[in-house]
Length: 118
Length: 183
Image (cartoon, rainbow over all chains, first blue to last red; front, top):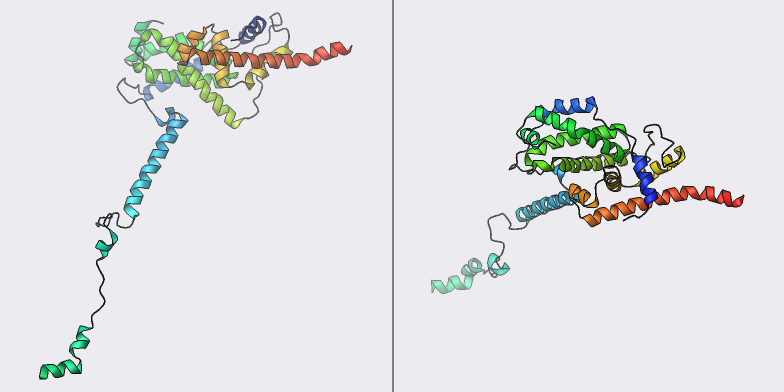
C-alpha cells in the first residue's frame, strides 16, 4: 500500500470535481428500455457469449472444432461409415488369393480328350 | 437503500426500479465519470449498468447488498467502455472537467493536467480502485468485496496506481528543480 499522505491528499482533491447527479437523459433512456429488457429469473441460465471471459470463449470454440474434426474423421476415414468394420485385420478382409487354375484350357487339351475317348 | 424497494423491483415493478435508479444513479454516474474521464462515456456506462442491474436484479439474493452489487456492475461496464475506447483511439483526448479550484492542494492548472495525463495512462482496472478508495472512501476490504477480488489484488492495484501517479508528478517537477539549481 502507498504511504504518501501528500499524494493521497492531492488525488482526493483532484477527484472531487465532476458529475454528481444522474441526468434526466440517462434515466429516461433506461426507463424507456425497461419494457424491452426482460429480467433474468434466478433459475434461468445467466450465461451469454458476451458475458463469457476470453478464455471461456476460446475453450468453447476449441471444443466445437475438436468435435467437428472427430465427426468428420469418422465419416471420411476409409471404412469409417461404409458399414464395414474398420478394425478387421487386412488378410481376412481381403481373403487369400489363389493363382488362376487353367482348368478349362486343360480340359480341352488334346491328350486329355484322347484319354477320355479311350 | 430500502430493501422493500429492491424486492419490488426484483418482481418486475418498474416504478420501484425508477426510485432505485434515482437513488443509486448519482453515485454510479459520479464514479463512472471519474474512472472514464469523459462525460459521454460515463453516461453510456451508467445507462448500460442500470439496464444490467434491472435484468439481473432477480438473481440478487440479499437485497441489503444492492448498492455494492450495483457498483460491481458499473465498474464492469467501465472496463468495457474503457477497452472499447482504447480499441479505436490510441491517443486519448484531454477533456476539461469543471474549472479548477486554485485554492486546493493541487496548486495550479498545470498540476491538474499532469495528474490527468498520468491517470489516463493507468489501466481502467487501476483507475477503478483509485476512485473507489479515494473518492468513495471505501476501505480495501470493502473494495475487495464490491469487486469480488482478493484484498491483496486491490492493495497491489492501489499501490501500483499511486506509484504511477507519483512518478508522473515527480517527473514533471524535475525540470523546474534543475532550473532553480542552474540559477
